[in-house]
Length: 341
Image 1 (cartoon, rainbow, N blue to C red):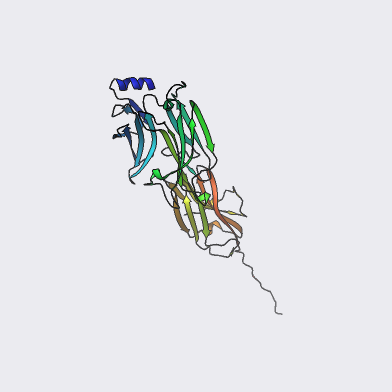
Image 2 (spheres, rainbow, N blue to C red):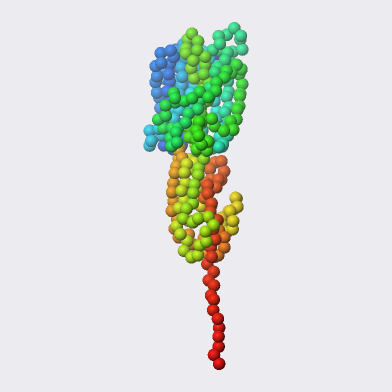
């Protein structure tokens, strides 16, 4: 396919650029073609999948194709994929797999592993071939969004190069990273991204160019608190309002409070407290506070009870907080009975 594309270019016919992605609703997409060595760029809007001819013929120095998606209601742009096409530069792809199946941008949580798969083909095995045809450079960049950042408008030129190496063989290379390398003082609260890129080497026709690149967004681990009733408290009649405070809820999460009789035991299925359920389906984490009144029906008899604040994400169910308290609604009457004769 690579040689066929080159023959088309030499004949003055545009090469074929094929891309595919499945975005969420509210996204538009475009391909940006950048020519080398001139640096001339052209954008063309595309549908969410399919193929089309490139807008420009490929110059001797090659061309880079970038697939962008734009969130319409927020004007946020995301670079989804890139390809560099030239006469002899190897072909490569980068794929990132996480526990979250979100289709638009790979994303994960700060405490979860992810896998990066590289595929390289078209690399020359001729030792006399120029170096740009025989090897590529693999780079890993990391970048923090800051304590409350979302990545919107981020300057990716400020990312930190974490590691780099060379690939000298065709094939598939898979690495699983147990934890993210995005910097941060509290590892559970990291917000940022990791970018994995394959670059061609500089030669007499073109500068070193990005052949393929993917990035994964890293979001913090949620935390929460239940206030209104203290742990170990004893309640008599009216149940006080409960306040549920939730921080950094994962972009795809369902959070709720449940109550059950007895001490706190992980995995217990209780009754959802009405008014406590919250669904987040977005591209960034969220903070929320809910106040629940009138939950007396859930504690209709005396005994020990537990309230748990749970969040369900693609990675499983996590307990954010819990309290255990006692309900005493028994009425004791102290009286005596006497008779008069």
